[in-house]
Length: 258
Ligand SMILES: [Zn+2]
Image 1 (cartoon, rainbow, N blue to C red):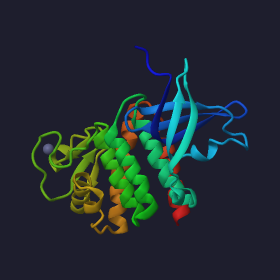
Image 2 (cartoon, protein in one colour; image 1 turned 90 degrees about the horizontal axis):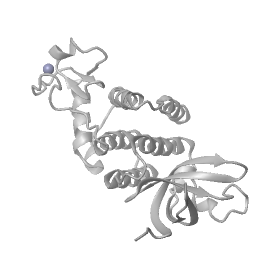
Image 3 (tube, rainbow, N blue to C red; image 1 turned 90 degrees about the vertical axis):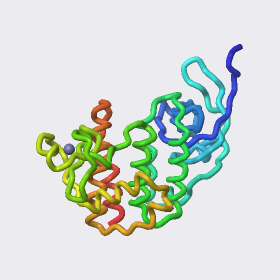
Image 4 (tube, protein in one colour; image 1 turned 120 degrees about the vertical axis):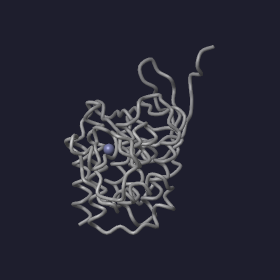
């Protein structure tokens, strides 16, 4: 039996690529189909009926007609436009950062329901909750877990001993923590304070409600951000994907938030 010619799915718009005069290729993240692409004819014409339902970061119900090379978008209805994300420059770059990480860490047509659920929950939180940086750190750690790169934070990845409550080291190459002894033989590892280790473990093991109770001063926040972004960058570069966008978005966030 052949596949039906038309299908529908809920989806979040994670990327838009202009094509020719007025057409657009959209990249979606979906609950059951993973990352997919769709062709939208004349989306950039002023009178396009679809355009409002296919903005970046919009959660929509989208209809497709199967095509030989790419499926064509035949309809779209907004479920949640995440308006606050579109009305504030800093929030926009937070949202785009989330979308770009999902795009980079997921393969086409590979279902990852937990990541879809995490992305949706993260966009909702960015619209409502206060501590945006903590929301992003929580998202990053849980994204890493759902794509198979959960960092080891409880034992030394070389000698496998449990970590003492002292300054230990994080190695992006080894994907986790090193005890002080093993860190001597591993270049490119970051020293991490006892508090940073505690917060990272809490973020990794808790849902957001649990994680959001922790109080983090700016110095500790910067320490945590550095270590996670170092790991993300290492993974993206290893996959031969550009990590430059990560710095660009990060700088935009910092710039527009100050
Ligand atoms: Zn060790």
